[in-house]
Structure formats: structure tokens, C-alpha cells
Length: 622
Image (cartoon, rainbow, N blue to C red):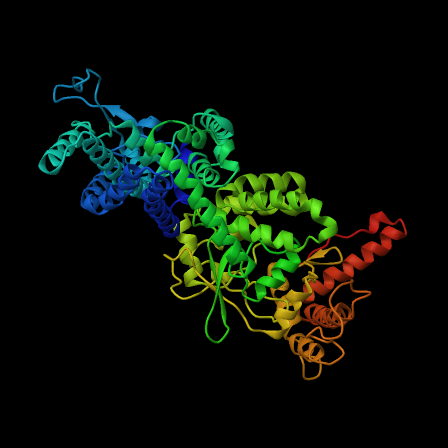
């Protein structure tokens, strides 16, 4: 299982976007830490702590070269230098000749065994072992780069924190000028093991771990989950990462007013009596308060989005307008909107996500439902946690258990596709920006490989018939994890989204006959492009929406009701139903095998009603 986990986890981590997000998050966290320390110091009247924060910030520039050098050394070595605790949580060197038993004893010219300095018989890989070692070396490249990134930021944090501590200590002793510089230099060298380069100062090392989300998990649910994964490696298929997500969540909670009092680490810092830790704790909550206030203001003014409609059909229609969940919304001088995702900007993403979701939920609660406000806020917390990428495995299993028919096949397909290195999947989205129809495990794998995805039918909008594309904002490339989506100033799409009805897309079955991916793609295309007279469905909807009786500006009547009581919903549903039937008829004409299967299904239903089960025929739509 360790061999599987090492290959699979490295495959997940292989995408360039993953590494950019990792470095971006660490950069933001490193930048904020000394600022928070300074804010907390000023707020508590502790100017020494404020100055320590300033010294730490200046130290980032002073130690940049050393951080690059040690990062390069860690990349070549494949192991961290400063700290044994790393970002990578998978097994190490499982794909190796030694672990697979593909080694042989080394003998000298006389045929005698040779021994190493520890007195053990020397072993070397066999021919097959060399192949395994080569495969392992290539497979571990993503975690090797992750190790180097971790080393860079941890070195910056450790060295700058250590020097800032020593400057504060020296000043408290009355040292100045050359005496202070000499003291700092001498004590600084004592902060490193001269043989291994390991960090020896506990406080500075703890701060470096916090800033790179690599704190050891010593208590709580996260500790139990980590132990479960270590004891039962198969659990890592469900939750491959525990330490980093847990530390990200802890960093969010310690900055959340009131909730931070329930967090053990924050309380310990606040009550420690250590001026530096106290200043940091106060700075955390003050910064968090400012972040939540700014996020709430942006959410109220529509500058950030939350999770969007609960109904997946309504959400799908909203996304047709270019809207994206958990994104910053910007608008140019011409009123054109762009949506840039913030969901992966941890730990700061949670501030914006919670504010946006809470605003959306509160906006749906009237005075009569005011008692549900607390439930709404809890729901916002749950939405933000469940929508995180590191919760994907858990949510997949939960959904599959709750609704196997709906989710089980998708979980299996996604798991199979995850063995294709993420770097391939990310490049595939750039080289082939169209989304594709995926039905089988083989389809999911092909959809992840550049060049092979183009053989799959395009996923199409049933409203317009156009291919559905991946976001392609400015700067979009394999290396941009924050690709923006351009909003569409489209009267039909905007109106369908405003109705918030969740109009159903075409069914993937006609009767009991399941459409092939090619047939469904064509069905969606016909649905949006087939014309009745001079209009396709989109054009017909536009004409109907612009009629005075529709009242698109809501001057005479508002929204509300259902397809039987709402004038707007009745008009739109009637048009969609008409074009859907026409598209279905044309589809059956274009695919004779489909027509034959539908005819067989009709006969089967008739024979079933008559009790003639011996006449039931097998459906064949291939």
C-alpha cells in the first residue's frame, strides 16, 4: 500500500498550480506574521514586541540568499535540512529496490562479502531494482520540489525569527552597536546544528512550522485522523493530507473572534506570559477582525461570491453567465465583470468564504425566520470546509454512501483519473480547453491526458449549444491557479439565472435507453441550435423575454411561484419544452441505433404490461 500511496500522492501533487498555491500561501502567511506581531505589540503597549515584528520582517530580505541556497540543497538531497517535519505526508522511498527486495549482496574480487562502516553487508540493486529506483526517483519529483519549497520558506521564517528574538534579548541587556551585533552573531550560530544544519531554537522553529503549516498534530480530531492514516495506509486514499489542512484551519480559527477562545494554542499563547506570544495572539485576533470586516463589506457590495445556489441545476445556469463560486468580482469601466477564485488562497480564503456565504444565507432569511440565522452561519462554516480541495476524498465517500446511484460511478471515475499525474491534467486543460463528456473509467483517464481528450465528445450548453470551456481569463496558463472567468452581459442567461428556478437539462436517458456520450453531446447541441422558423431556443427566449407581457424589468410584478403560477416561469418552461421535444426527435433521426433501441424499449414496456416477460428483448444502443 505504501508503494501505491507514494505514487498516487505524488501524482496529485505534480501539477504546477499546486506548487504555486503552496508558495503563494506561504508568502502571504510569512508576510502577515511579523505585521500581526507588531500590531499586537502596539495594541498591548508592548513596543519591544512591535519592534521584534519589524526586525523579523526586515530579516526576510537579509536571509533570502541563504534560504535559496538551502532550498537548492534540499532539492538535490530530496530531504529537508532545517526541520524533520515536512509538508509531504506520504511514504518516502517506498518505490525503491530496497523496499521491494530487488537487491543483491556486493562481493569483492575474491567473492567475499563487503561491509559498510556500520558493519552491515553491502547491498546493491539488481537490474530490475535499478529500474524500480529510476521509476521511484521520477515519481518523487513532485514531493522533492515540495520539500525544496518548504525548506525555502521555513529557512526564511526560522532565521528571521531567531535574529529578531536575539536582537530583542540583546537590547533588553542594554547592548548596542557592535556589542549587540557580536552578541547576535555568536548566539545565532548556536541556533543550528553544525553537522546537520537542523534548527535548535525551539521558539523560532515552532514559529517556522506555524508559518509553513507543518505544526505537529499533538491533540484533537486531526491527531486521531493522522494516526489512523499512519496505522491504516488505505485511509490515505480518502484523506491523503491531514497535517497541512488541519494547521490551515487552526490558523483560521485563531483569527476568528470568539471562536479563538475555543482554540487551545491561541489560549496558551495569550496566557503564556511570554510577551512575543501574547503580542502574536492579540495581533491574530485584531487582524482577523479587520479581515472579516473587510470581507463582510465586500460581500455586502457584491465584490466577492460565496457558494451560490444550493440547487445544482440553478447553480449550473448561473455559471453559464460566467459567474464563479468563491471568487473576487471585479468590473471594468464598461461594466464587464470578471471572477477570480480565492478559494485556494488559504488561510485567508476562509475569511472571504465565510463572509460571502453568511451574506448569501442571511439575505434569504426574513424576519419570521430570524431564529434560523445561527443555523445559517453554521451552514456557511460547513460549506466552506466541505468545498475545500483537501476535503474532496471525504465528501466523495459521504456522497457515495448517501446516494450510491448518483455519486458512486463518479467517485470511481475520479479516483481512476487521479492516477494520471496532475501536471498532465492541467496541461490538457490548456491544450484542449473544452470540457468533455465522460461516462466510463477509461473516458476519465483519456480526459486527463493531453491529446487523447480531444477524441471525447464535447460537453455542450443545452441553452446555447456551444461547447463548455474551462476558465480562460487573462494570464491563463498551466501555471495560473487563479484563472479568471469573464462574465457575460447576456440578457437570456442573466434572466434564467435571476429566475433561480433550476431548469432541468436534457435527460441522459430516453425512456430506459441510456444515451451514449456522443448522442448526449449532440442532443445538447441540437437543443440550443435547432431552429423553429427563424429562431433557435436562445433567440426565441430572448424575444419572449423582451415582450411587455414578460415584464423583464419587474415594473409590474415580481418573481415567485412555480411553473404553474409564475408567468415568467410558464413562458420559459413552455419554450424549453418545445425545443427539447424537437431536439429529441431530430436526435432519433440522426442515430438509427438509438431509434431501434427506443422501439425495443417501447415493445418491452408493452410486453411487461401484458405479462409477457419471455418477450423482453435486450436494449442495444451501440
